[in-house]
Length: 210
Image 1 (cartoon, rainbow, N blue to C red):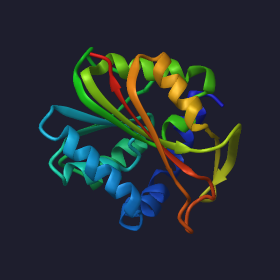
Image 2 (tube, one colour):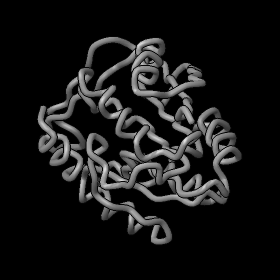
Image 3 (tube, rainbow, N blue to C red):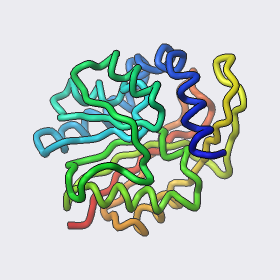
Image 4 (cartoon, rainbow, N blue to C red):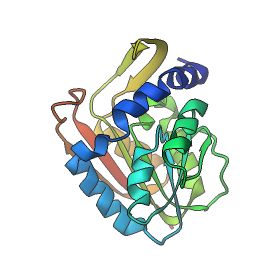
């Protein structure tokens, strides 16, 4: 799967995806509690960016709790949808492997199920790029599916796509984070809700070493 396959796939399903997921946090109290706690830590600290923002539901949730949010997504169509749904949040197209952001420019980064599209051999590189744009002491909060290997979709919402989803173990992701220069790494998990794909959900928190 190439970057263009991933980008094209999400471009095709953006409207369908937004319809299904934009209100999803209303059914996910565990996620909301983690986001509430994250908002408390990063509010008034500077700009926070959601990478792989999709339609912007996480950016919306944090913005509504006083966080200065922006969002970046690989899919131009997702950026368009996110901008329509959240006109008070700036969104732009970008690639987490090569961010168009200054060094030490963000207070925090949040990624909900977007690191899962990065090839294993590129995960540490992506995390190093995130480390670069964070201020010293900046926070990283990412979520992913627990497991091994990867899943593939060639059809989604009736559209032809070619999208890979990678599963990670908690200690595996902690190792990538440490290799990328992060410290204070904490991983928590929850079982899937009954309406979700049946994988455990993992959440990793980390801090850029000052």
